[in-house]
Amino acid sequence: MLLPDDSGAAAAWDDFVRHHPEGSFFHLSGWRDMAAAFGHRPHYLTVREGGAPAGVLPLAQIRSPLFGHALVSTAFCVGGGPLALSATAREALMEEAGHLGRKLDADYVELRDSGTPPEGWTPHAGLYAGFAGPIAAREEDNLKQIPRKQRAVVRKGLDGGFTVTDDRNTRNFFPLYARNMRDHGTPALPRRFFDRLLTQFGGQCSILTVHHAGRPVSSVLSYHFAGRVLPYYTGSLPVARPLGANDHMYWALMRRAVARGDHIFDFGRSKVDTGPFHFKRNWGFEPRPIVNLFRLRPGAGLPNINPTNSRYAFFIRAWRQLPLPVANLVSPVLSCSLA
Image (cartoon, rainbow, N blue to C red; front, side):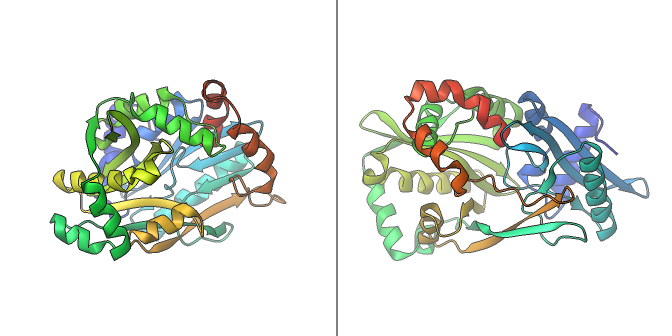
């Protein structure tokens, strides 16, 4: 059945997610409203056994003239997929997702970071790896967890003349994020997306900004859920790297996360064997293979919507050359369809 559009049903959904051992921030019902607010049709599936909730599966229907027609779990997230109390409930959710995909004539159904595939689903692994690990409560113990070379960089940052602020709005964050995205050749999400995130999830979102010589040089928007902190969106000036501001940013986030009761640092996913992949390994985090599951339309191949696809090379090069105001103006038309 579909999740009813009322606050009571959403609260029950979120209660199920919070009590499930594999529940994540990406399973929360607030993403239904986020998807709808940015032009996607949500289909949030639930299954019951013996009258009690037994499973949930958040899905969003995404239509794009450039990237096709898909059902995705979860839109704007790197995770999602079925969350169930039994194998029977999981199979029922995935079968209904496949049926819905056929009914809507979608090119494919994509369940992100969703483990072992049942019959009829195609796994896709090897492109991304996830990184997560514990944060020590004591600062010195936390430093010792970091490999020696990276630890020296972090210690240097402690005397780097940085000021760190906890921001309640996107004023510092968004210009840094938008510039980074343009420099990487990728359309940025609009500022109103991040403003909506802060409204939708409240205290489960935080923004931390590192300042140097009186100006913001790096910033991160993070999610907090079930004792985990997930630095999800970042931005920085080119000068941030030689200053060590990005390293200081992650260190400051770790210490603030401990103060608010988090004990797991979820460094997110990176494409295997890229700069961000090795950066996270340098911090002492070991990669975990990520498996996305696809239910494909008959005769269709796996989608390949990522910057390493040579099909997008010209677009990426051209986007990097755009003046920032132009990139920010055009980005929302494209970025929301990349959910």
